Length: 452
Image (cartoon, rainbow, N blue to C red; front, side, top):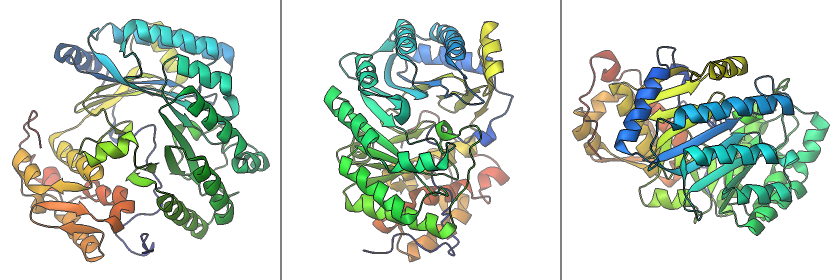
């Protein structure tokens, strides 16, 4: 098998990034307080007028320092969340179908879940008969067959199974991490109740892990045959795994690199395909088929088959995306509750993607989703000379071309099989290109309605 992962000493590819936060693929470092609730309301009105389809994300935060501490606090949070649903829903039209829905964070209790779903269905047009992609995060420690059945009754057809808390007692974490029975039980429940897709999260690089223990865990997961695996580095875990008091201790760099190599080699050998951002899928998965057909997109939720939808976020820290506009709710629980008590939206910051950033984002998205970029299409749409506009990135792409990871021509940039595992880092070259004329000497000419 060829050496798909090159040595850390080579300057082109970053190894330590793991994956981006699966709960947020927007670059929140660029968000600022100049974007507020009025910007969101204008975007909602435009969405209604255009009758855009919707992707809905609701955050029910875990019991941490930033989220509800007990059942009473969770009930108080749910009341404010219902107010936000009312405030947002009244600005959208009944003909705007919810094609994608995700409930993230902690899994609400049975009564809270039923109450939340009733409120959502009163305000939003959910699809019937499993026509939409409706997914939920579940906690391995607090989910059983009864919960899986209830979630299915509420219309969820995709489930993501979380790994043990990294802030728990280390001995308990190791025991839970290595025991496949709870995950096996939930996967069996998902198959029995007819879920369309099952994802399992898998972290690597924690202090209590070794390459041997990681290989054992991965082997048990492969035997369970989940449809997707989301792999992440414990050095930068997804938001739902950041617990109060988490030690954050990591293993050695050599051990982490060994785990990463084991992960890619074993999953590829088992027939999974890597599509980027730590996401491995089976060949018949919806995301894989969308990529093969050129219909895969990437938004603030990550890879999606519904990139044509306006993305509406509800709850603590939730992000909304309407074309070039990003808005985010406050991540401070007290502020979130107070704003909704006053009958106001909890939007506190955001970002409007400027012309140069739109070029950059489109290039990165198409290269990540299609594994190929039509250079002439970009030049025609934005009125630029690609090699000059991305001069620094082009030089580094040439290095990757010499290494056999990409293929360059006058018309296309193509990611070759040897470079597919580094698609995230290859796309990042365009984000890091500081010599772009778009930053230094004017903006490209953008036709908003033009297509590639």
